Image 1 (cartoon, rainbow, N blue to C red):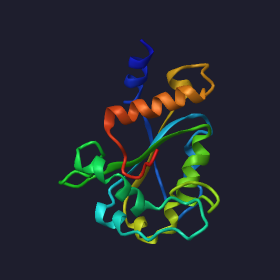
Image 2: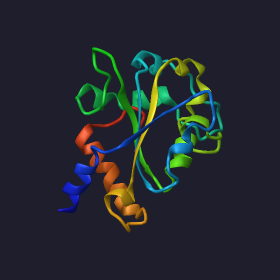
Image 3: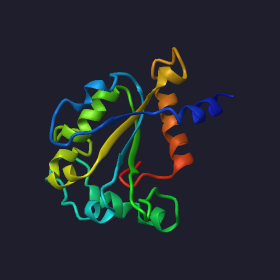
Image 4: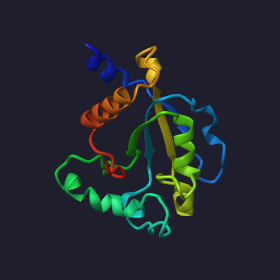
Length: 168
């Protein structure tokens, strides 16, 4: 069945270290449709205390997103850092062009709905990874079908939990 094929594929994500201070780290991410998640070892209290982005921008308010997901956190449905430390997934999504989305999440412009992590210099002290899987590597010839990408995104979240920086 195709859904089990999708679930099985979610063990094969490729990983690229992200640089919050140097542009171009995303060059090894394919400009293809697929799914992605962002992982970090940043302590939750650091993320919770980040300032809001400038008014009038589409940039995500990281601390507000964490508060938004409070009920999920309290009921064990959100992905949280391990008490022993280490990396955890903070964001997951799907995109028509994975390379562009990787760039946007660190160095996007204020008119794009994204994390733009380079805005917060303190986050550069921690490890960040962009993990991705292309649609065609799972379903050749799918051409990044939007319904397939949406199904994959929700399937991944159903299997792993809700990332704290996701809102929809």
